[in-house]
Image (tube, rainbow, N blue to C red):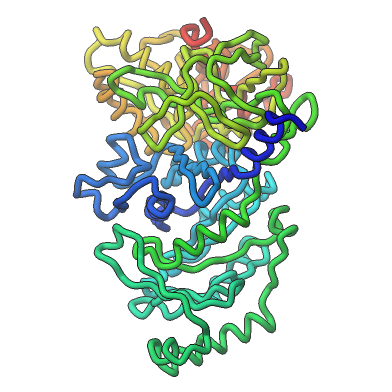
Length: 539
């Protein structure tokens, strides 16, 4: 084996690429900050509840995120920890942005499922869990907010198994709860881990290690609490689900950890166990067959496009998951969709909006490449010829608005802004077949996306708009010959064109969708297609 092959193998083995999935308000942004804190990427952790201060969460770079205290874009944070290179994909924390989260999961090898100890398994968690199950992504569970009054840990384990249908194997167990939460018992190492509360938990929590039988530990928590802990551990030993690493790697079992991201209790031991549990990059399916991460030729796919991360330069960055080989700045690659050769001269790595120019990257890494408007979500790049990786899920819009421009003279800026922002995947742009670009129509999975587009048009393109809500609930692309005026005669259907001129129908409700589909059996109605590209982007 050559030195280059040995180095590639070693670099791939130490990569860990993962995402965090959760229902809104489970503490995902706070946990992300604390992982960065323990990884040495930040020295002072911010949290959502302290957004009034200047220390906003590192993962939230957009102005509207900082104003509202939520995550609405996918951020990429990369940092070393104990000899590993961690690639953390911080996904949107609002349920209106599930589509961005779904796309991001396509780039992850593992996921942390974050649950609120008081609320347990919530609706958004279920949706995201099902996406992980579909992709056979291993899931590690972290039950958060143990420093607050919550549900019995045994009940939470039962709910995971009953609602999600996956065996839960507790790797740690809480010592106390609520105001009496003092630490966790590491079942795998058979150690008691006690933590000290620090100043606003902005720094690492001091940790003491002892054994269950240590008299000082028993005295510290009291006989009654010690007996409850011992009884719970005995019950888990006799009747709990044992851990099977092979089942975990197949996504058929989840190890469960307890802690408090806000106070840092249990975060460090969780991170230490997680880097051992999470798999390194694995082979990925392509049209040419499976591609091994240790294959010498570089390959990867675009899972996100973000415009204007740097407001001073109006840039456009494509986020690429490296799937095989070694990336080198300036290399030539084949663009799978067009067959054209591209030269990747500008390459970046990230910690939220902070960027570093890099010369190389390896399978498992997430890199940003400067995009003049050629790339789209799902595109494949390869050094060894034209290949295509498995597709990224798409969703039909459920909410629609007409864009009303406040200053007609800024129509050119509006077009540019909508072109770029729609290519990021948050919204889709449509046009009435007669009015064309005069009054564009936006479609989105969730309504909050319209607020984001409105805010970004103003802040990044200096365009003020208002939105007029359309009474439509469904969108379907149409293949076949039809008369738009005939379909629109009911008043419950609107015929539009997307940016590539493909016909699309908006339906007012389920009834009219069924009626039109049943009456026009010669037409094909399609819920999702590859997102369109404007003439500007395709040029």
